[in-house]
Length: 621
Image 1 (tube, rainbow, N blue to C red):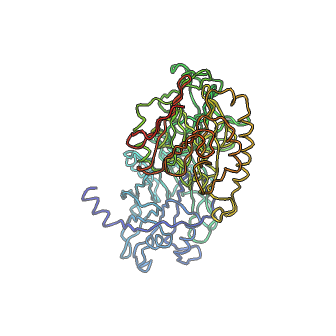
Image 2: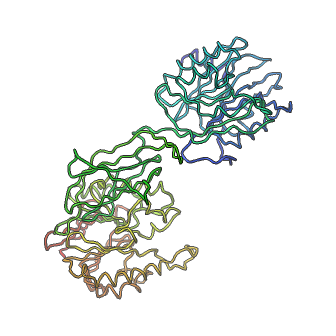
């Protein structure tokens, strides 16, 4: 800002700071929208000739807008008995305020103002022509857009000239621009025709706004600037039936800003649920989208795949899950994910924004005939990203085919944001766009408000349960879910858990699996679950009763557990175990481990490393 502008602000603008407290609204609002309001308040003088600031504030509070353009405001005039009208409204609505004086009046000022929930980054007043009285354009810059308020002259030449001045002024901004106010012109006027060359009317011009008690014309509007591009969609617009508080009716519009294509992806794609002929690709976006995958064996010739549910393409969502099926075993595929923003999704009208496209990645499908693989196993990270990064540095030179997270890696899942942050960080480090990962639940993944929705962000192997069995080459993997680490009747669960039954269901699955041809014919058999049933000593062992009788006869080559936060190797038979048991370390640098399980032809071996890369165990299986 230059010195002249600072003086101008000092003379005509008063900026008041308030915290925008939450309050209820009478008008339902869709997520991810901005609510813009315009209100000519006639200095809070109602049609009943009573000046009532609280009444005006109550109207604004009912709407609960993000930003309000307010016209006809006195600041410490004789007429207002020394009251700063906008400051009073800001106090009553708990919003930030910027005042722009157009003229001196009765010992004070008279002009327009803006109220906003968000603290403005900057503001400016631009003089506009007015033959009968000077007029103004008031601008505030917010994080995502520019918002302007105005009150046009009663003379048409002044109004036409004002349109040209505003157009020249707003073209410098690199953000979306919105304008609201009393234009003193009807929809069929030359002024509105001039506006519509570079602005879109966001409010409904067919809804009359003046006079408030018996409206006969529309002269109040909300506009979006389209001089550079169309930047939003209108999801709802209303003119309120408020016939007393002012001589104009208030109006608002709910808009959805269109995202920059570089701000659409929340996460990179990550691979889930691998198979010999399929894989699932998942990713999240910041905005509702229609998404698809382009893939093929040749990166220059790729076809599309999307998710359809009973005839409808999955769209207008932010969690994306697309299953690529009918693939060839052991084959390299190239792919990229694409998400096109949806800004309006109505029964007979849809509007779209930009399309974001990821870089091309690749993966190799599993192959039942392949006798070699490398698997990485993490456990008990507890959202300790710095620790995870150090463990990953120990395997940076190891080519691996799959990654297992054996529980308590996503800790106490209280929100989607927490879960997305963890999955995104882990995926980035292990290059999960090219290497599939499998998440097993630990007891901490079962806790928190978002725990039951965690599978929205992950995919169960086989797609049905958190327990399963599948092959990597000629090696059979069996995954179980031990649930919580206390009895179901413990007070901390408030009677909401029944892991006892869930473990009994898995016992039946385990009994059938260990008797199956797929299990018996496998050259190697690997078992993974979080809470050990061997090695806990006197501690509560939730699954011992249901599982250990079956496991005592099962011919696994190795079992991976976690939970105790202390690395342990239990040799076969030491505690009644029919196979070696490896318990991974904990969530700090003193105890954390990463495990490398390698299979090559008939040989299988295991290495357990700490954060310094030291080998805690080397085991030939």
